[in-house]
Length: 297
Image 1 (cartoon, rainbow, N blue to C red):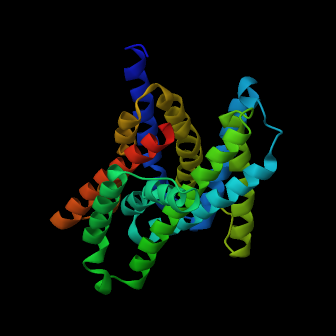
Image 2: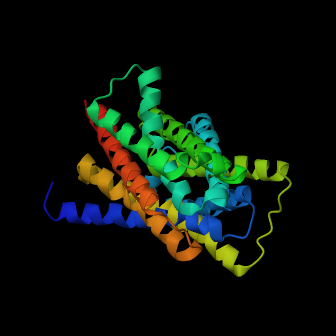
C-alpha cells in the first residue's frame, strides 16, 4: 500500500460515510409514507446505477446471472428499509440510524449460533458497552415512553437484524458467484427491492404521488447520493485501509446523523443520553473490529 493511497482511500470512505449519514434525513424530509420513500429510493437508485453500468461495460459483468439470489437478498433489504423508515418516523433519523448500526452484533450473533463461530473479548466488551448505551438512551425511562416511541426503538433493532441478514446474504452470494461484479449485483438487488417495496406500498394503500419539488429533491438525493454514490465510495476505499480505520471512519455515519437530527429536527439529548450514544458508538466500533478480525482468521 503506497502512502498516497491511504489518505485517498480514507477520504473516499469518509465522503461515503458522510453521504449515507443523510439517508435518514432525506427520508424524514420527504413528505410521503415511509414505504413510498423506500420505493422511490430504489427507483432513483436503479436509474443512477443503470446509467453507470450503461457507460461502463466492465461493471456490467454478470448482470444476467443469479437473479434468484438477488431476489432473496432484496427481500431482506426491503425488510431493512421498511423497518428503518418507520423507526425514523417514530424516534427521529439520528437515533434510528444509531440503532441500525447494531447490525454488527446481529451479524456476529448469527455467525455464533448458526455457523458456530467463536468471538473474543472485543465482541463481548463491545456488546456490553453497546447494551449499556442502549439502556442509558431508552431503558431508564422505558415505562414512561410513548407507545409510538417504544415501537420506534423496536423497529430500529429489527432494522439492525434485517440489515445484518442482508449483508450476510449479500456476502454469501458474492462468494458463491464471484464472477458477478458488485455493481451489477447491487443493481439487481436495488431493482428487485424496488419491485417488492412497490408491491407493499400498493398493498398498504399508499399513494405513489410525489407532492412537491422538495419531496422530489429529497427522494432523488436519497436514491442517488445515499443509495448509490455513498456506498460506491465506501466500497472503493475500504480494500486499501486496515479494518480498524474503516470501522472508525464508518462511525461518521451514525454520529453525523445524530448531529443533523439536532440541527434540522431539534433532537435534544441530556448528559446521560449523550453518554449512552458515546458508549453505543464505542461498542459498535469494538464489534466491528471483532467481526473484521474473525473474517481474517
